[in-house]
Length: 260
Image 1 (cartoon, rainbow, N blue to C red):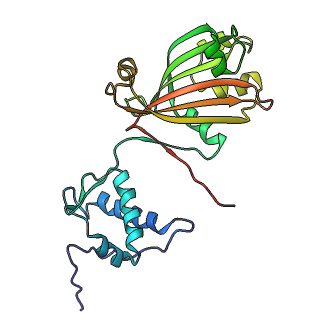
Image 2: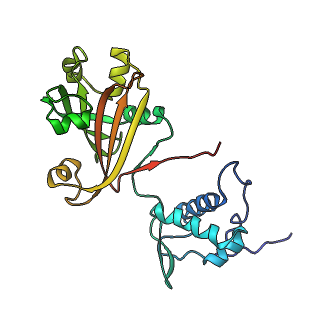
Image 3: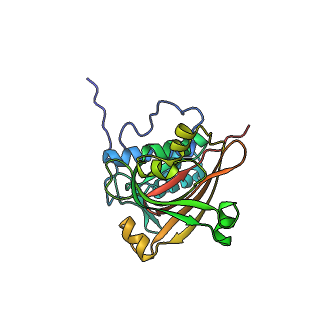
């Protein structure tokens, strides 16, 4: 019988792989494997990961690839990196957050369908000149303003505070919004027969006011992402504008760009 001596610090499967996944960058493969090993306890919390050079040799990649892989693991919240101190494992699993893919209109609408809506306030407003420019209409035009919170099922903390504007020229929209329990965009398509043909989005970084922080159960003055989305029909008419405010530690956007 032949016995094989296994090192405590180098588990036997570290150098084994099912082969590179098609289309997945090498740095992402290394990052995924490191994160899997951390989750399995191969690298316990408080331990140090091997050096960049050791990882480069182990995975047969360049140090540049290793650095990018470690950046992915760090951004996932599993490690901290300090010069001369090395790379320390600080968590086995990423902190709770919501990742939204943003590669198509379907992705945007799917996010809204997956989130639970809690409406806080609905009011009819008349556009001032400044608001009319924002909503691409004439001053004096009437819109409905809907303020709501969104939650992901199973997570007690809201992922965003949303303020939406909907054109009151849509007949009966007031009563329909009173019974709304899902995304406004789905209501517009299902009830009014319009098609969301284009969504324009801008994102900027802001700090939460006291009132926003209270509603989101977050720290006042804390960082947040503000996403302003404009929903247009086939004729280029603005049907809805929404501003979604996300606490910085609960949400991330994921975009995949493919060269054609």
